[in-house]
Length: 232
Image (cartoon, rainbow, N blue to C red; front, side):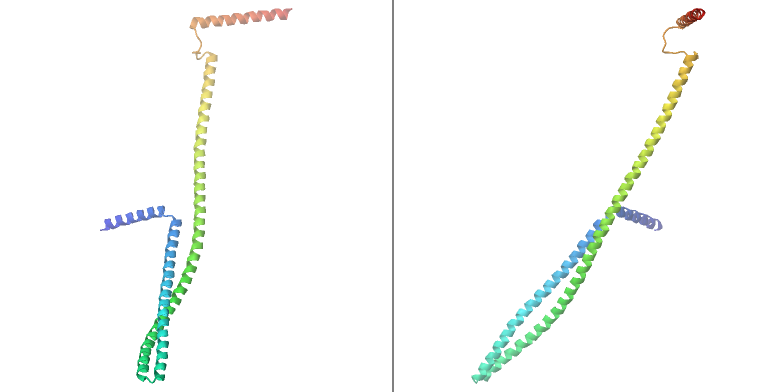
């Protein structure tokens, strides 16, 4: 069980890390704002329903009141006509309707209280939603700015690393160039001193000896010419 618990903890930790990496705070804020708007709409719908119910009861009460007024008038007419029985009947019906009106008044009063509560809740929630919206947009702007700054910093860091690699490549190229130049100079020196035969020159050993003799003869001739000029 201990091993399974550890494995479960590791999996949860990795999943949490993955979720954190994938989560965009701006999307979370927008989602929360949408849910609050839904709550606000539900409260407004509740206010509308309660108001509608109250209006319906008020209309019903108005009709009952009209009937009561009519029965009251009928009772008076019956009394004038010396019809107490009709007057009694009208008053009995009036009493029944009056009780219904009183019941409606109670319901209407309850709905008015509920309406007041919902209207107050709607105002409070509207204020909170607006405050959240302003805060949400501020946080989103700050997050976007921070995200842009991170991307710029990462780009600059990447350029720095790339330039460092380029610098190292240049150093290696310069070192190789210096080595090649030194090697070329050494080979030239060896060729000049005769230590290393110039492979680019043609001919064998006899040709080279003859060339040396011609060079020596040319030098002797030049020396003889110079002596004649000096003696003159």
